[in-house]
Length: 255
Ligand SMILES: [Zn+2]
Image (cartoon, rainbow, N blue to C red; front, side, top):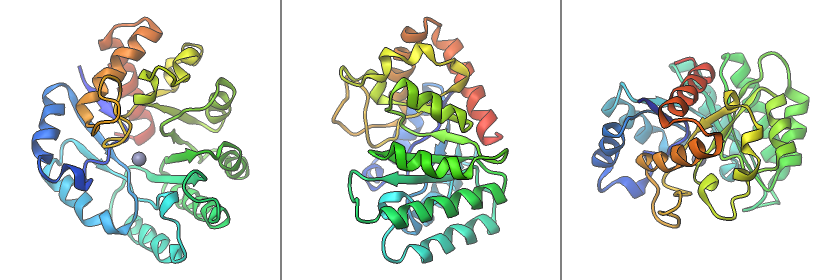
């Protein structure tokens, strides 16, 4: 069984004490493919180190996270552009809009989101979207940018069935993680109305640990809890679900 974690911040400082053991725990359990979203240029070096430590398992993205779109965001976008020009990445992410932490930067968040979508198109790459309390604002940008080059993943999808269908209409797969296991997570109520071909699995480690680890440090091996929950929701075996979602991740990332 091969399980793909499409969104995991394995380079995070909170793993500094036991990173290799933590990653090997996941690999031993069958979680052998990790897609690594970027945040900003301060993490680039640790991401490259992670890749050289686990070259068969780690696949990097580059991008500027919406909560890190600040006054000097243009320098950060230049860094993303330079990275894309210098070597292979598997997606531009995570990018998008976050109005939970800061509403005052909406205009520059939208601008950074739009520019990074255009960069992804230039390199024929998928985008990985972060959207928090900003569905209307994210959809507005996607509506303007939709064409045959726009595709990717709506990471940590937590919206309604209608919002799920709208995201899919922009050729986005839904990244499903720990929230699906929460008692009040809501998405477990309608997910079975969404075809499995639109679903990929993720942890967003070290955040959003699934039940029964909720509130604790998340790690990639906990994706098994998400796999179990979705297997129940869709009434399929763990093996079938792992295979379908891994194939979906290959369709997005090209590997
Ligand atoms: Zn993330």
